[in-house]
Image (cartoon, rainbow, N blue to C red):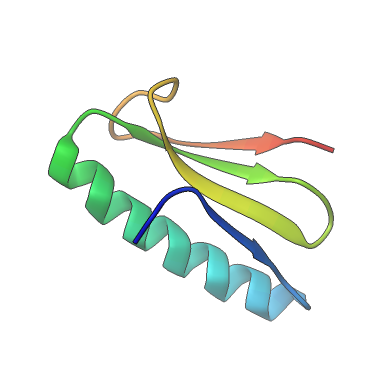
Length: 67
């Protein structure tokens, strides 16, 4: 799977399930490399990006509001 993962949600339930799934995949990739943290960025009410980030310490998941 390639990062960043960007997705659009339609409701709260899909937001929760898609974010959980994306962060879970990102966590597995981060654990393999042991160099990146996870950055979850909200671009709007319904659009998110989950990325591995050098700016976030390994073992940390950080949230960012970009709107």
